[in-house]
Image (cartoon, rainbow over all chains, first blue to last red; front, top):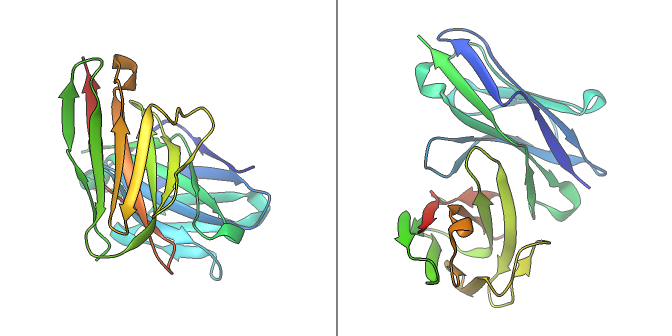
Amino acid sequence: AQSVTQLGSHVSVSEGALVLLRCNYSSSVPPYLFWYVQYPNQGLQLLLKYTTGATLVKGINGFEAEFKKSETSFHLTKPSAHMSDAAEYFCAVSKMNSGYSTLTFGKGTMLLVSP
Amino acid sequence: GAVVSQHPSRVICKSGTSVKIECRSLDFQATTMFWYRQFPKKSLMLMATSNEGSKATYEQGVEKDKFLINHASLTLSTLTVTSAHPEDSSFYICSARVAGVGEQFFGPGTRLTVL
């Protein structure tokens, strides 16, 4: 069975500060890992994904994440927060042997950015 | 490319009535569509997987007779909430998987309020 744990339901940062959103996963097979962002009353937008290859993945809006198999982690980072980054962020895992067939989401982390 | 739309974006209905939500892939063919439910300040829970031309596969705990899913074409899937009750009030999000690629693209969501 797969599961995703996002540490911290809320993360607060100041504008310009480092953003770090934590995600740990559990999977019986090599995983595909995703980060999505959701703005209020909207659907999900893919930020980045890890499938195979390079473990440091760069996404949109300056975000990146690093797959660390030994730590079963896929933390999301951004060097400098912007006010527009305030949103809900979801980490998700999918089973590699079935492609992208189903996604299991974490509970989400709300990123708050203050001036 | 890879745009998914949902209609309506917001619906309010009386208890006991049925509501249909449409999910369309606008610029690609989607062999598989997924329906999620999101409670306030909660993560997305997969309700069912819908394959074009065949019966939907429901997740454990999801009532098939209450949440009717039809995937009649490669660009359209519908979710009908039958005999809706206030506890069915939620944010419903669909996603569509690009045939041959596998990545899921999400719709903007439908806010259902049952009075």
